[in-house]
Length: 210
Image (cartoon, rainbow, N blue to C red; front, side, top):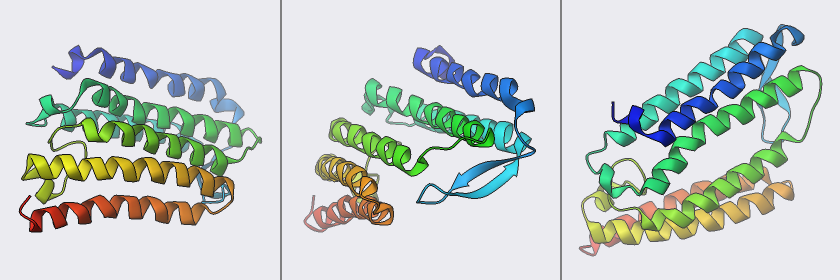
């Protein structure tokens, strides 16, 4: 019930109406099979029957969104997550769903654009935004560098998430640049490294008694 009283959560649910309306408007104009997956170079490498591709993907995103929000709200340390970070989390899944849905419809109608370019920009910007806010998040079980060592110590958490924030911002910038240069795979490696570094740092702090 607490989630239903959150205006940002309710707004995020309302956003799912956009892809639903688009599906209903364009459904009869689309072929029986629509593209639903793209490789790292932005080329179509997976398709689905249009009903599953449109409505199946929509309700899958909705289910993931509700589950993620529920877990975040039920976090015992929910009060340690700033409202602005929760609002960002509320927006991620519906916005991804809208972009994905519009892409499926656009390609299904016979048009095309550089999917890889758009995704590089979106992912990079998301990493930069989250990286800027990550150091401000206090210890919790939903958002941040949630290693067992960081969760066991406030100091470890603060230091690990500060490093994690720097890593995410740098990774976001590099991911955009590498993507524009055509090195998408290298950009993915950068993100993985940026994820691993704060986890290792958290362990090092733990071994130092922090």
